[in-house]
Image 1 (cartoon, rainbow, N blue to C red):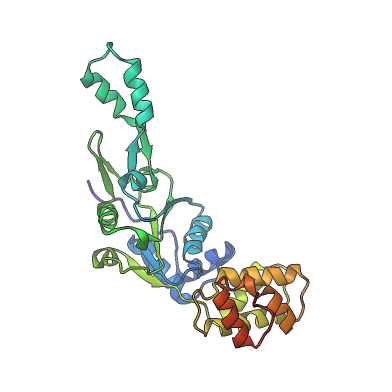
Image 2: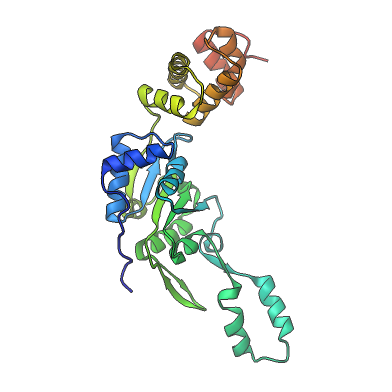
Length: 296
């Protein structure tokens, strides 16, 4: 069966930027360009980068900006085809077998129990079968083992799934696929070749400040600038977990809630745990900022 047709959703790179912004995601031209090209080539978008820089949020915002259904596969160790593609509703099948005992031949019964009413769709199959436009988010793909990654690659290459009892299911329309990775392991070259690649790092100071001003109602520009300055300074030291954009926003919302207008050392010390989540990181950040009072 031929591949489903490519249906571009964006007319220009500028439209990508504008529509993402209207949905609350501030991007730059390099990100918008890769999204635009992935859209027009019909290729999955592989987004790598540190935790908390907006990889998952990009997929969610794409779905919101386009008005598409978001279908999400959350990856973890041990995920197999029953969590990725489909499985059979064994309890329902057993009840059907018990109800038909002595009244139907096995051939009749097997045709019945391995049919649509007994099929449990999982995210990838659901996206392929959907007649509605969808964004398929395959989140933290680096947590899959190699076997599961190979299975996923096969589906993304052919846009079809073979169910032995029902035949081959081919995509009627191509979903917009976004895969995210925290780079905890190296993904296969085959998967990377299949995708367009985007690396999301922490934003520069100007963009992070703009994100804070956009996402934190009521914050003053001066406070936003000081927050970003401190966060970027902390990211420059060796930590177990550097503050993400999400934690920058949490800290900004905390300070607005506390009606803070100026960040003095006492306030920074009292709220630093919103930014960093390990005691050793708290100690290092406090030393770096020349604070006291963060140690128990």
